[in-house]
Image (cartoon, rainbow, N blue to C red; front, side, top):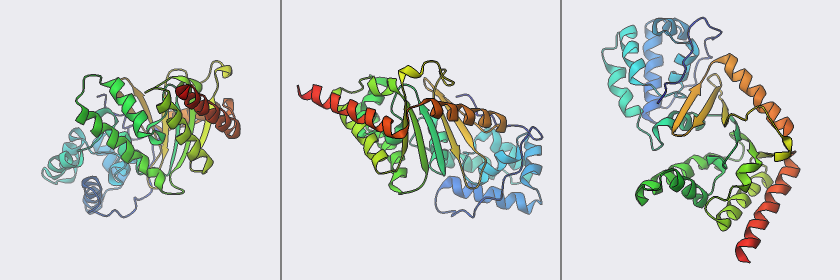
Length: 294
C-alpha cells in the first residue's frame, strides 16, 4: 500500500489545536495517542518541534495523538528515538494497527469514525456508509468472486458497522454526491437495487444525509478521474481520501485538501438540488421494484 503523504515541517502546515482528552480504555489507538501526547509534553516539545525531528508536519503528530491517524512501524521507531521511549511505540503500534477493514482502507475507515463532517463523491457505486447489507454483499462478491463466504460475511459486517455512525441523529454531517451511473448500474439484481435506493431515500427524507445526484446531462465535471472523500475533525486538520482498485491514499496536505474541497463544491453546484435528486432516486427505486415484480 502506498504510504499516505504526511507533509513536511515548514511547508504550509501548522500545529493543530491540542487534542481532546482521550479515554485510554476506548481503543489501543486512543491509548497510543494519549501516551504519545504524554511523552511529547514530558520532553518539553510542541507538536511542531516533534514533527521537525521526525520530518513530518506538526499536524501529522496531532493526528496521531488524537487517534485520527494510525501509527505505523516506520514512524513509531523514530518516535521512540526522538522521545527516548525505548521501543514502546514500535511494540505497541502493532496492536493498535489491527482492523476489521481491508489494509488499503483501514486508516480511512478509522478516521471516518472520528469525523464531524464527511463529504463524498461516488462515481460508480453507492458509498459504504449508506449501503444496505445486500448491496454491500453484492459489491464485495464482485470484488472477490472466489473468496470464502465467511470472508465476505466479515467484510459486510465491517461495512454495516461503519454505517452505524448514522445512528447518531446529527453527527457526523454526511453530504454525498452520487453520480447517476451509481444509481443505474444494476448491482446484485433489481430487488437489491430497489432496496438500496429506497434506503438512501429514507436517510435523505429523515434529513440524516444530504444527497445530490450528478446527472449524465451535467456532462464533463471536475472529478471525472475518480471518487473522493473529505473528512473534517474537531481536534485535527481535515483529510482527503482517494481510492482505486485495492489501493487507497489518505492525504493531509492543506493545499490539496483546499483544492479538493473546491472540487466537491463545484460538483455539488453541477448536481441536481436535493429535492430533485430525491425524486430521481425514488423514481428509480420504484422502477427497479416494478420491473423485478413484473
